[in-house]
Length: 402
Image (tube, rainbow, N blue to C red; front, side, top):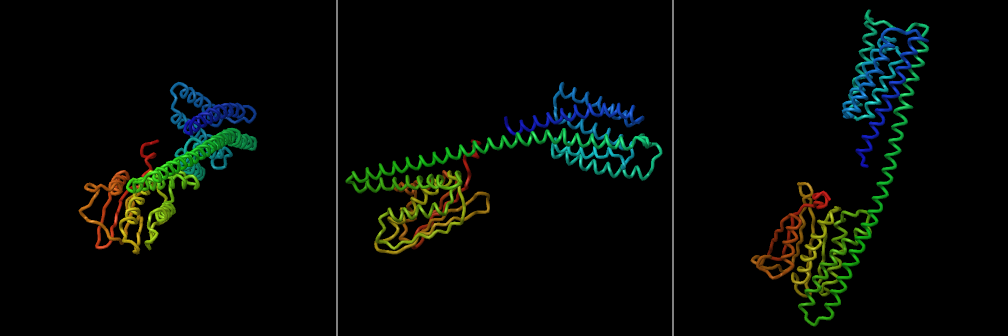
């Protein structure tokens, strides 16, 4: 049963309990007013009218349904009858005026908008009742005899207190306890799913590392340097994905990656694994503290892997120095970013692009940019090359409603 169903059931139970209890008590109060207290006129008549109208209202609900319409009718009946009893039992000094507060509470128990409407209406009504009392209209008579006023005050206060505590208080407490139980169950399920998801990331990371180890063994068993280089490139791509699953496993957030630490770890690995020991090359990161979705981070990691690997292998001459800058900038549009990867190496021809090259790395960069629903731009300079990848960080699970 979902939260909305819980709320609807609680409202229905509260309405039935309020109607049955208030109907029974007002009928008893009507009889009590007539005989022991000798109160005649509008006050006992209003009690009886309220009981009858409430019974008709609840019968209508059982036949037609529509909880909201029934609650509105019940609120209007309660308000009109309460105003009549207040006016004919002392006006602003009537003890029955406290029932107006109960009506406001009932409105808020049904819905916030009803509570707000009843609150404003009751405030206005109290002011009007005070004004009527000050104007001393001759047609409004206090039906409560002087000797019965203390007794009427007692039963009015007991009636108000019982409705607040015995009806609304108990029902709201049960609803609160049920909500807490539901919340505890949901939290347990969330914890179980988080543990399961962590285990999935851990196993994916282990499987990717196994694939990397197999590729490494395959490379060692090959005498062909070209094949070794291709296998090593594939190994780096696998490691770039394994790093993401490892970070998701060890960190609290299971859906987003802290991008700067990830890029730092990835570039450190590439520097250590690529044959650039004789090159004085630095990698500088200009990345703010930002967390990206896993569906965004994995393609970006592969893009960085390809671009940085190409720069380290081909962008700098032997024994030379150089610098690779990786930046990430937030654009004005929602979830829009631009990833920049720039080196000050020897660069390559402007005519060479992903369409006419045999380089898998260049083709991957453009394909991955399309996967990110973005675009890639390559700028060639007199010295160096720069890639700018514009993309949107969108959680595809949310987009597809999974």
